[in-house]
Length: 68
Image 1 (tube, one colour):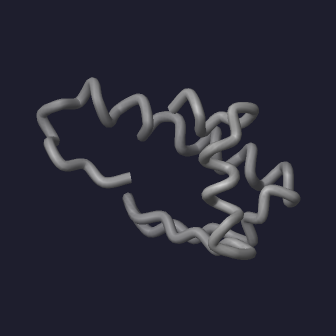
Image 2 (spheres, one colour):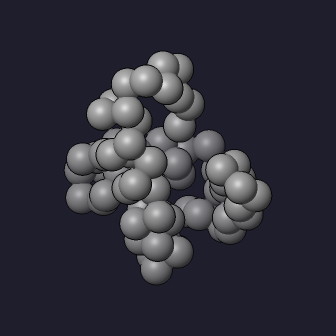
């Protein structure tokens, strides 16, 4: 996620708050392709099995990413 306009909190805050739930969902279901996560402050580094895995998760209407 990248915040382009910090003053438009109503745009980025829901996505920011949904991130921990999405990471928990991904950790609980290894078939999604997430291999690991490292965090340092506001930066989160994710390791995925392939390029297609995060794209498939993002487009899946069953996961928490779609509403966010």
